[in-house]
Every structure is written in C-alpha cells, then in structure tokens.
Image 1 (cartoon, rainbow, N blue to C red):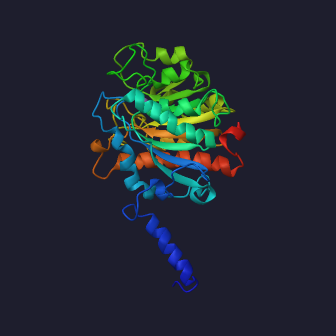
Image 2: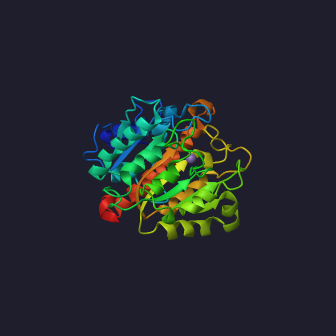
Image 3: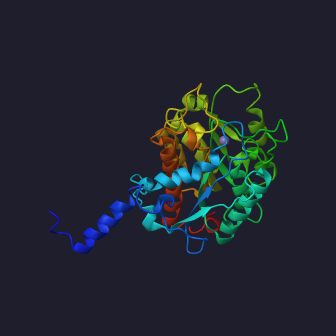
Length: 345
Ligand SMILES: [Mn+2]
C-alpha cells in the first residue's frame, strides 16, 4: 500500500502525525519551537499568566496559558478557507510566558507585561497571546499602540474587541484595588492614546447589566458597539461590513474575551453570562475573519478559567482555535507580502 512512498517520506509522515498528538512531546503553543527572543521570528506566541486584574470571580485565570499549552498541538492545523499552512509559511515561535514575579500586584504586573511586549514591538514582531484576565490587553497595547510603537507605525491601534462586557468601566478608580484592571483597560487605553476608539468595534456585548447606562462609557469614548441584540438585528454580513469600515487602513489588534461565546460553547470562563445567548464558535470566527487582509499586528485570547472547564477541556480547545484564527490572519497578511506591521500600514 505504501509502495509509492520512500522510507524517508514515511518516517517524515510519522513525525508529523506524532506532532499532532497533544499528549506527546513537549507542550509548546501549537508545538512551535521555543525561543527566548523574537530574533528570526515572524509571529510570536506568548502566555500571560496573570489573574490579579479581575478578582470578581474565582482567580484562576493565570492557569490559562498552561491549560492551552497542554492541548495546543491539537491546533497545529492548516487553514482550509485561506488555503494556508501558517506553520511552514511563517516562522512562528513560542516565546514562553511573561515573567510576573509580582503577580499579586496588578499594577506592577501590567508594567512587566508592557516591558515584555516592548521588546517584541522594537523587533517588529506581531504577537498572539493567551491570558490571563482581560487586564493583560492594557499591558500589551501600552507597548503595541500609539506614539513610539513600531508595529502600529506610531499610530493608535484599532480594536476588534469580542466580549460580553465593555470593559470601559470608569465609575470607580479601581476594581477590588486593581487600577489598570480587567474592567478599565478599554477606557484608559483610549484616554492614554494607545487605542483609537473612533476606529474600533466592540462586539458581542450582552446580558442584563447592573445599571441602565452601562454602554454609555463606550459611546462617550467613541466605540462602535455591536451588542448581541444588534448582531441579531443586523445579521453577520452587515456586522462584517461595519467591522471592515471601521478597521480598514488601520493597525488592528484583535482581543477575544471567551465570555462572548455562549456558556455551552465555552463554560470555563471567568465572568460567565448565563442568562442570554452568546456566539457559537462559528459565528465568532466568521467575525474574526472580517479582519482578513487588514494590518493585524497582534491579538489575544483571555479569561479562560481552566478550573471551571469541562473534563474534556472544551474551553481550552476553543481558546486554542481562536488563537489559530488570529495567527492565520497575520500569517495570511505576511504571505501577501504585508511585511512587518510597521511597513504594512
Ligand atoms: Mn473582557
């Protein structure tokens, strides 16, 4: 049966087969080579094991990167829609986890996150990260967006922000003592000029909040807000148009809070919204793909709560699948000759 394959080919096929078994070998992200620096790297994969920016639920979000690493080899796939093998078309390395020696100090940890990503920004290396609570996006974009940033060409970044919540909380200066918190990041990144809200979209916002004016901070900051109700009204095609109209021609960052997914799809998340239906994986991925061809300089997947996941680890697997989509957005752009983020804008 295998007569038309050489012995060397068969051995190579066995190696590739083993690489796709999640329980085999060393569990780097997507079984990419581990590296200490962004040298010779087109796309960096990073874990951000940070929990102290939230705290309103169980505080196990720092376990997210390890949980995804454990099953990540499952996601070493090719992208059929894009006809893309990102693992051979781009040099993608696992840069490990951001060191957070003062993990119980949110403000210090956000600074450490920014320092880590500044090294990637200076190298012009886009990054796809796994958190960690949503405060990590603040730390990352203090390095990737705005004045002095190479990846964004010194511009403010446009957000494609998936979430059940706006994270633009401003009623209190802190959240259980955390200032650059998981609830504040989408506000202070705008006022500190790292994000251009007028060219950003928040999508998937849902549920009954605690106050009637909870969307107002997003509107005041300038965000386009596509709630789940509005998504249902407009339909996916119109939502994709809205996303593209806002993001076209801008440096784009995709941030994906897993709580935008329905709890039946992603049960292991921090601030679960059980009372109203969230996205299916296919609906969310269709909207992520709206950013295809745009200058995507990075992205993250946040709020995974491995200790609350199903025994089959479905939420980790969905997190991995969303990371894969963001990796493929960037690898597809690089394949089209997008160069580094600084050059492509
Ligand atoms: Mn969030």
